[in-house]
Length: 254
Image 1 (cartoon, one colour):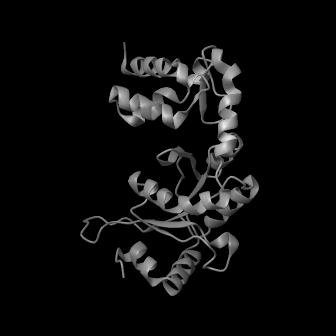
Image 2: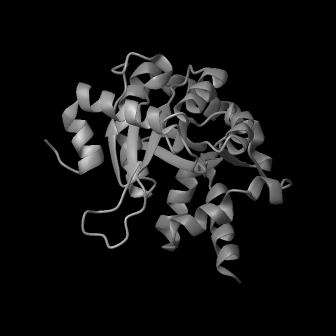
Image 3: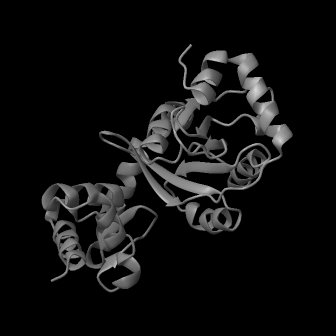
C-alpha cells in the first residue's frame, strides 16, 4: 500500500467514527490524520483534497470545507445548525484575522517581511491593503533580486465578491503580487477561477477551536506594477507610519 493510500485509508476511518457522522471540516480532518499518522501535512492535504471528486459514491462535500461520508448526509443539519450558532461577528473576525494572516504568509515564505496596515491610512478605500509585505534579500546576501511588494486584502463573512476582486485588482497597480484572503464558503468556488485567471493569490480561512486556519488555494503570479505607484505607496507609508516602513523595507523596528 502506497503512502497516499495509507493516508486516505486513515481519513476514511476517521470519517466513519460515530462522533463524526455530521461530517468534519477539511482542515480538522488534515490535523487528525497528521496526529494519528505522523505524515507530512502538505502530503496529507494533497492526498485528501480531491477525495469527493475521486470517490463521489463514498464521500461528499455538500458545502465548501466540509467532508462527510455519503451515507451520513442525513445528519448534515446537525453541523449546519452548529455553524450558524457559532458564527462570529464578521467585523470582529476580520480585524482579528490580520495578525494571524500575516504570520501565515511569513511562515509559508510568501513574503520575507510584512506589516499590518488595515483601516484607511492612505485615504483611499481601494488603495489601502490590510497587509503589506515585501520580498527582498538580506543585506549580506551575495545575489540581491529586485524588491517585490506584496498586497493582501482580507474580507469578513459579509463581503461582496465583486468588491473583493476589484480591490485586489486595484492593488496590482503598486504591488508585484496580490493576495485575497476570504472566508471558507461556497462563494470561493466561483472566485477561485477568476483569481487564477487574474494572477491573484487566494487563501481561505476558517475559525477552529484553536484559532484561525488558513489554506492556500492558489498562488499569485508576479506582475509588473507601475514604478511610480510603488514609490507613492511606500512614500505614503513612510510618511504615515515610519516604523512600519522601516520594518518592511529596511528590517528595522524603529
